Length: 247
Ligand code: BV8
Ligand code: ZN
Picture 1 (cartoon, rainbow, N blue to C red):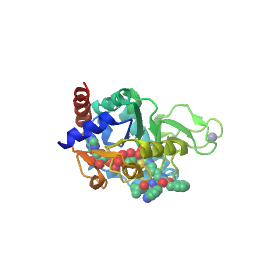
Picture 2: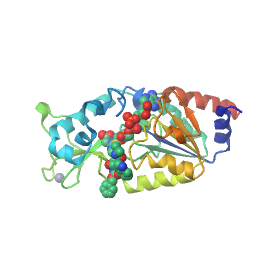
Picture 3: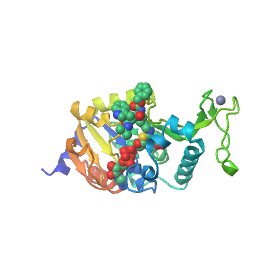
């Protein structure tokens, strides 16, 4: 039996399918990844931008970097990979979507109950009093938004390096990884922890581990099945084959 048939068989027998996504799943929507050549980090050092110290030391730089990313996201839309993942939730008996992405494209593709391990880029809050900030974010002349309650600096609601992940999100993700029958790691270099532990937890718990990535990663050696193609192509094709297979 060829490896793809194994995947279809295991999906047909699966009670619970889980998917972990990273920046690669949004690449075909035109959003740069973090570590690919020319990616978001290419120009900057992650610790410099995506960390509290980086933000407090270079507030204008970090804030304008996030505003630039919000702009890009507002001018893009979910791609067929996001849509295939939204369809998976309709087809499998139990489905869990875990994302490291902060762009909310899964939500816009119709996915519900998305576990956002690293927060999201659309919400902002005050670093001092933590009040949610609903005011204007793109102010003229590089002015920075200020908290209306206490005048504190406003930051995006993402998880920065050195910051804890939302406790419930991580717990739910680990629970899904340890109980699912098939685990997809799609569009992630699997280099950022503790998210990168999830595929290993799934594999150790006996799930079939499928990697969807045109390139090899540190996870590839553990993957039972590798779909070495862009997720916007591999996932819709897989779902089409699966729907024919279960007819
Ligand atoms: C924490 C939000 C501790 C902001 C991000 C061990 C255990 C615990 C922590 C650590 C540890 N070792 C090191 C750490 C620290 C650190 C870490 O993991 N560092 C790494 C670099 C070694 N982890 C942390 O700091 C985490 N916090 O652990 O806190 C703690 C404990 C107690 C008390 C206090 C603190 C927080 C990590 C979260 C950081 N925030 N983002 C923002 O987005 O601006 S991380 C950032 O990287 C994004 O979220 C991104 O999603 C994530 C992972 O990157 P990927 O998504 O994988 O993207 P990447 O570019 O790397 O890869 C893209 C892939 O797609 C490539 O493989 C490419 O081939 C592929 N691809 C390209 N095109 C396509 C494609 N695939 C499919 N289709 C395509 N078309
Ligand atoms: Zn405040």
